[in-house]
Length: 221
Ligand code: HEM
Image 1 (cartoon, rainbow, N blue to C red):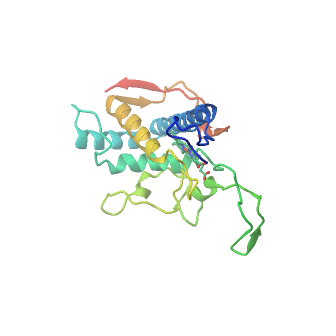
Image 2: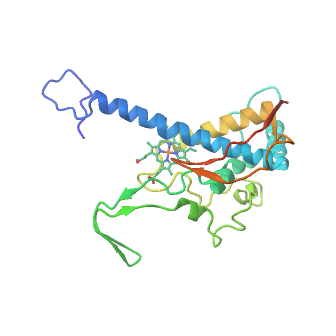
Image 3: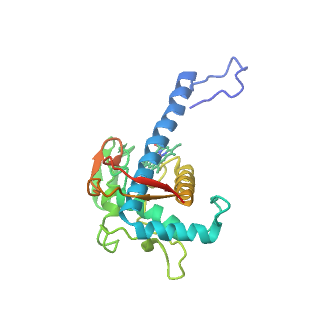
C-alpha cells in the first residue's frame, strides 16, 4: 500500500483514502471498546463470586500503593495482575479468535492446508486444556505466580492470540484493564445483593463472549 504522507506531491499515488482512514479508526474503537469492557464485566463478576480473592487484591493494592494515591501501571502488583490474567484465561472473551485465510498452500503437522482455506483458532480450548492447566475450570489466579510470588507467563496463555496478526491493541488493553480494575478496587468494594439471582458464569456469545447481566452492590471504601 502506498501512502502519500506529503499530500503536496501531486504525482504520488495515495491508496489510503480519507474514507479508509475513518474506517480504520472506527475499527480500532470497535475492536478496543467491546473487548475491554466485556473483560472488565467478567472481572467484577469474579470479584463478587470470590470475595476472598477480591480482598487479597485490595490488600495487595493497599500495601504497595497505600490509601492516599491511586495505582500506577509501574506498581508491582503480581497477585492483582495474575487475577486479571486468570479472568482473561477462564472467560476467553474472544473464544474463536478472528478468522484467517491461508495465504499459500501449506502443510502443518502432516495436514495439507490449501491456499484460501479459512482457519479458525479455538483460543477457548487452549485456555481450558486439561493437559496444560491444572483444574482449568477453577478460578485460580495463583497459577500465574511462581514460588516467589512473582508473575510467570505461560506459553499457552494467549487471550490476544499469537503471530503476526495478533491483537494490535494488546499493550493498550493490558494497561486499560489494569488501570480500571485497580482504581475501582482501590476506591470501592463489590458484592452480590443477597436477593439477586445466583451467580452464573454462563455466557452470551456474540462478537465476544460476555457474561449474562448481573447485579452488584458498590460500596465506597
Ligand atoms: C481485553 C481486550 C482485548 C482482547 C481480549 C483482544 C483480543 C483480540 C484477538 C483474540 C484478536 C484476533 C487476533 C488474530 O486474528 O489472531 C484481536 C485482533 C485485533 N485487535 Fe484486539 N483485543 C483486545 C483489545 C483491543 C484493543 C484495545 C484494540 C485497539 C485499540 C484492539 C485492536 C485489535 C485489532 C486492530 C485487531 C486485528 C489485528 C489484525 O488483524 O492484524 N484490540 N484482538
